[in-house]
Image (cartoon, rainbow, N blue to C red; front, side):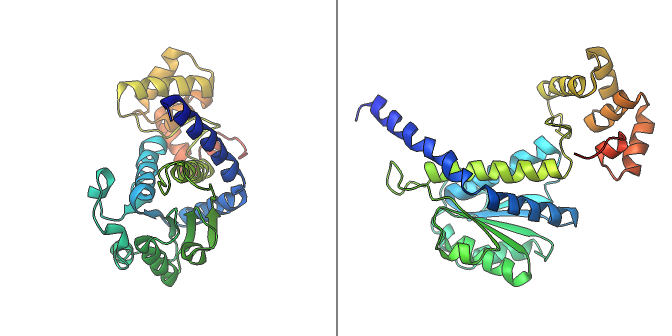
Length: 280
């Protein structure tokens, strides 16, 4: 095929992915509710994967820390082969039937944690090992896979099946299967963080301001959320020690940084409660 024909074919196949994910939204929502309940009770969200699936998991977990300000101890990802496997293949890593359990044991996995096993085939030994260990520990287990009747599904409390069909390049699950996994992980982590209060309306109120671009974005977020002008938003952000959450309370209630922090502490960190607004 010429290049144009190849990419058109891939584009046609990729259009099917959102439809497949749409069929799984009830299971995805159940998983979100389970994760929110666990994290509110002090539990953790732990992704487990290998190869492309593991890299998707590592990416999603890594991006939640700066996007939502969530602790890296509360949300994390395990990939077969460890850090080396993020940027390169580690031969035989995903075939280990013991290392998944070993890696979760090192984290002192407990009943309050949620383990999300991700494997397109639903048969990856590393992921199956981790899920068996999680079930034995009483943790909530969620499976994300591309086949319904597979061992991974049978080890999960909540099964998210994404039957995307044959890949354009036979067996290359980094294509449609990987795209479907990415979409599901986006939904899981974003919906969980929103339900936990790490957003205000659709604004990233807990984003970490690690560079000048993000500081500028924070000012715009505060302006949109409060109706304040540029100068007032910049002043509040500085006075709040670059905490958008504190700055928003200052702007909306017309109080100083100290009072804003007191209100947030009294509300247990619940932003809407600190603002005297009803939870939606």
